[in-house]
Image (cartoon, rainbow, N blue to C red; front, side, top):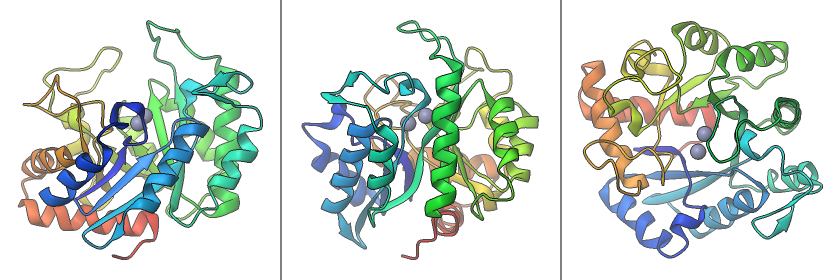
Length: 278
Ligand SMILES: [Zn+2]
Ligand SMILES: [Zn+2]
């Protein structure tokens, strides 16, 4: 399996990222992709990617500034002033182990800690990263929380200039309409451990498993978003990339195909989207 979106680059894994990575590789995960959410965590994702480089256990990085951190442009965050973030990101993105730009997008969820980040700042950061994806020829990894209509509308503006394929929506949630618009634009669709949860998440209207079933097998990708979104029956514990297998098994059943067929299909999807051959 490939875990196309997780965060061994976050502090939750500072003490044991190596054991966690090895556990995943031993369990049958062949590729781990760590995604940045800020400049420091993007830099860390690149650093980690260079530590693992074998067919039995490969790591790549996706670098970007999360919409939730779009307001940190000129303040200190994780020990680093974020000014010139776009210049720093453009430099990081040129590394040979960087395969995409993200996570970037829009997030309209009202968080208890800090509400919604100024939508103008989110939009500005999103547009800059779309331009970077076009300039460097790297696909996008989109973060969408309750902002699917706006994201689709903005991506449509760039349609003629986006990469082919243009990228993926990570941790998909939303309506059937947003899903079909994303698919029409050529995007791949990622699902995580929360697809195994019962019921519809707050602020959403469609069950994730229904959205997964509506996604063609040739467009689906599997991810963990570790340390978040631990699949059932492990929910409550810290998530880790090894659990992408649990998510994959769940989705294979949902599609009514054998696990190895599903694994092969999603691996091919990963290679096609990120232009990688392993
Ligand atoms: Zn996200
Ligand atoms: Zn994430």
